[in-house]
Image 1 (cartoon, rainbow, N blue to C red):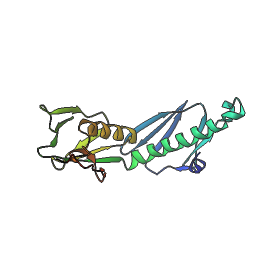
Image 2 (image 1 turned 180 degrees about the vertical axis):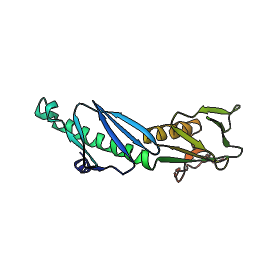
Image 3 (image 1 turned 30 degrees about the horizontal axis):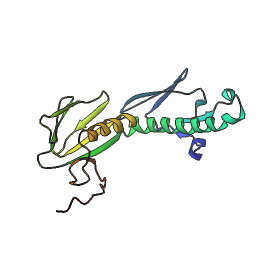
Image 4 (image 1 turned 45 degrees about the vertical axis):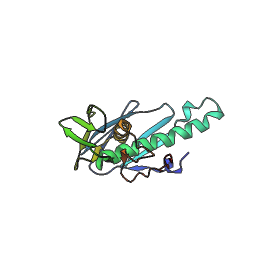
Length: 184
């Protein structure tokens, strides 16, 4: 278990946190996020701080202690990511490498031309924004860390980087270990 889960999460002044039954709802300038809680954790809001504690009532046998600790650390991280997401937001940057490879955004659709006979059109999920400052770079932004990472991974999956040529879609700063090709 993470030792961080024992610390409280500080709520910034422009963020509202509500606890409704087994849900945590976080509202901020970048949007609203909600998370359903596990029966193994108890969340409380006191003095502008969020506390995530283990639910001792859910302990059936001593061997479940480890499960309680795991859930406490996981939900602490999820709630912290929600608070950061509604205040600062998250972003992933991707680069396209290859001759003739490019991307463009038209409304809520991302069009990728990455060496196939047809362009690949992807629908941008609700709550995310995608922009292409240059034809070979893509920026995915949003308040939900999981959605941003998932959509960036789906974009990368369209044309994963080739280890022999280095062409494809990759995260900015990602290092691709190159292999040596066949020798004649």
